[in-house]
Image (tube, rainbow, N blue to C red):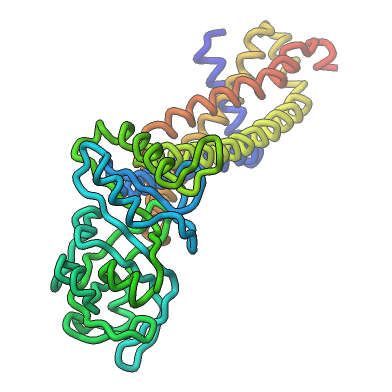
Length: 402
């Protein structure tokens, strides 16, 4: 019997038992559909994470107050990082473009008119806007004159301005930051969330001198941001900065550092590691669903073999060989998994298109899940279809007809 005829016999057998065929496909549909959606979400998440990482800047080295390695947020209340450290970097490091200092406080009370809220206060150097880069879209940013005169001026993020002034322009108005009066001189452009996932638009930016002496009453920094002229110098600069701060703080390795140095490469590596681990876990869950679907299909096929023993015996009696019986049942298993794969891919593709419209989840559709779906389907069909096919092929014609 030719292979096309064997395949046709198998497809007719599946069509004759549609409910059973659908039950065999159900696990594959769920598994493949989940795989397509999961990989689309994983791609979308990776794209968003890398977008945030790129916003960190490819030429930047960041020195955080507080010990630790890798991408860590600055530790609040740590008093080890000071302006003298920034000056030492300016004096000793070669190839830098901007060295800027930042001191910040979270959840600071603010008032404007009859409205009150809490926001983050960033006390920054005048070159902070260029170092980020984060210019003012309305009004002006912090200037060297503001630094020199300890001016009580502030530049607001869009979300904070909305909370305090509604839809009105805040420029030229007065606000109170921790019960100290400031004049709003600018409005920052809307900014994406940070690599750590924080909304950065809920902030007020004030001169560093004003913040340290009149608002925070401190002499230490939260972090120092160094922008290099050439991105190729970033690894060298990070190591030199680490050694320089060791000398400044009289820390001799392997003692615990009281600061951490972060580069965009380290942020990207950490983000890729987290994204890769999450994707692997989600793909494993989809694979588990396919495994369960394969077990269900195998058991239904084994039941089908028991129910069709007379059919198998009759075909053997009229001349069908074991190979033909084996191939027919294996064809049925492959047809079920491929059909389930096609339906699962269509459903997963549709769900991947709908998710960004209905939720805040980002998805990116690529060719990988479709190729992987076909490979998984063939693997499931072959692995779980072999045992029922072998059992059908081994049936004795005499015993089957008895």
